[in-house]
Amino acid sequence: MNNEWKKILLSNNATIENNTVKNFGLSIEEEQAAYSNMILADLSHYSLLEASGDDVVDFLQGQLTNDIKLVTEDIGQLSAYCNPKGRILANFRIFKRNDHYFLRMRSDISEATIKRLRMFVMRSKVELVNKSDELCRIGIAGLNATKNLSSLFKNIPENTDESLTENDISIIKLPGTLPRYEAHGPFNKIKGLWENLHKEAVLIGENSWNLLTIRAAIPEIVSETVEAFVPQMVNLQAINSLSFTKGCYPGQEVVARMHYLGKLKRRLYIGAVKGDTLPVSGQSIMTSNENEEKAGQVVTASWSKDKNIEILAVLQIEKAEKEVLHVESDTGSTIELVDLPYSLEKE
Image 1 (cartoon, helix red, strand yellow):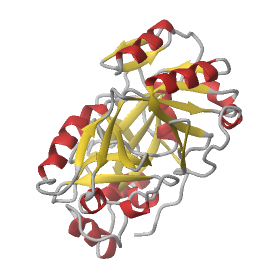
Image 2: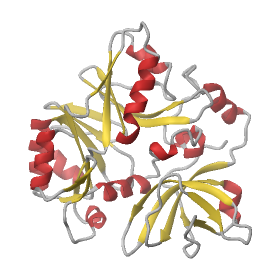
Image 3: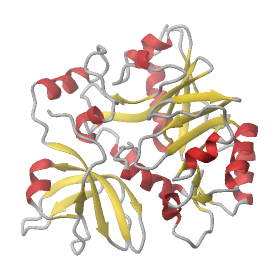
């Protein structure tokens, strides 16, 4: 986290742990503010990897699950990085600014991801640099987010995955049932944007931002779930994060075989559960029958309100359709599955 940016956050009563804003000391239900006005979040719990050089397109094309050739200054994408067995090592949002590519991913997996990618650069003219301290990043969401951003910029992206850079600030439209954006830029630019938006916004911590990501059913790989899933298990084919026509990348044969020949047995679900303890990523989901069998595992989880918890979980489809499920070690609270906000591609 940029030290000057950290001072700004602390001046707004932020509680910061491990470069993550937990809250801003507010007593109201932060997540509800998005449905009446606008929320503003620090996104320092994500890291930014800059990829550049004469061979960068060919390099990324040979490493990632999506077609990097579709990324422009105006259109970004979701993508992932797999091991040779098709298991996801990392997933991220990719956008382009100033002719360089940026991969935004969860910070706890960023160093391992950068280290592994650098192993395959070899003689290619590619430079991979962690830009997390040079470019600050914030999230803006809520009913009035579009209106308030439009008052500060000549243009803002209208459709999901679109991006625009103006006055050295890159704004990206994110998926979700509410208007939701990310903004990336140098400290002085993001500081000015934050101060302007703060006048109309409720400041929120990591949990409330993650809650909107869960409701959009966008999975995020963290350290506890590295190599836990193949792309189809977390619905990457349904959120434009996976190309079946772009050519080879690590694990591509496994992913393609699942798509063309296999029958998907596990997929991503949204669930709601009550409890006193927030489930952790990677925690097991169990059936509530007398045999108590493992049915899947938690991808991410966030508090909602009044001890309500919302989760993304990869579950065995057969068990999800027929069994009552609960989070491991919490047999008293069953999981209520809710509809995804997007349709799934038929396997």
